[in-house]
Amino acid sequence: RAFDRAARRNADMLDALAQCGVPLVGLDPAMTLVYRQEYAKLPRMARPPSVLLPQEWLLDALPAQAPPRAAPGDFRLLAHCTEKTNAPAAAALWPRVFARAGLWLEAQASGCCGMSGTYGHEQRNLQTSQRIFSQSWAPLLAAEPAPAEFLATGYSCRSQVERLRARRLRHPVEVLAQLYGGGHEEDADAAH
Image (tube, rainbow, N blue to C red):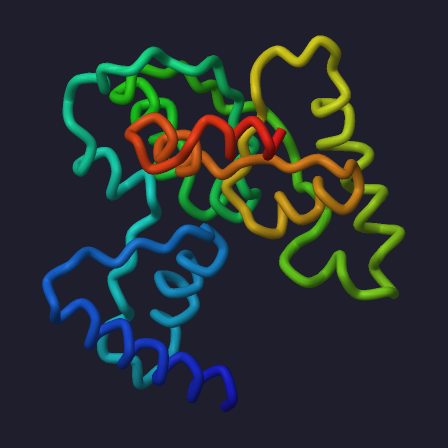
């Protein structure tokens, strides 16, 4: 019942925002997919909110030609496991979005980072969470020299890397914002 009430409140709020005529974009794939999948299962939910993943929106919003600035490098995407399994077509859009911006991005084969939302933060799950990370993401991140800069779409994934490797991975949108003038190179350098 609590989920039902929260979902209805959120859906009403998102519907009111959508009435402004601006596309709704959810940066975190797990929460965005909750809107599409879990909200749609509620018996009295007339219409789940229409919230796009960033790559779905960007493919239409970015200009067809690359920006005039030089490409800052090559990238490998560690997509959130929920995104890869529940919206595989959407997860596959990131390389197309980056190509539109004149950048190269490869979707990196990987498993789960082990965080799974709040799961990895719970004391009773800590060892399992760390073991999953060590079997899946840790070997990829340890590759020297790094084949390209790793990016991650999931907030929980980025949190797990920062917690277990003291390393900050950027969201793909951060790279695009920097390229299109929304970020400063000094900020990006400080983040690495």
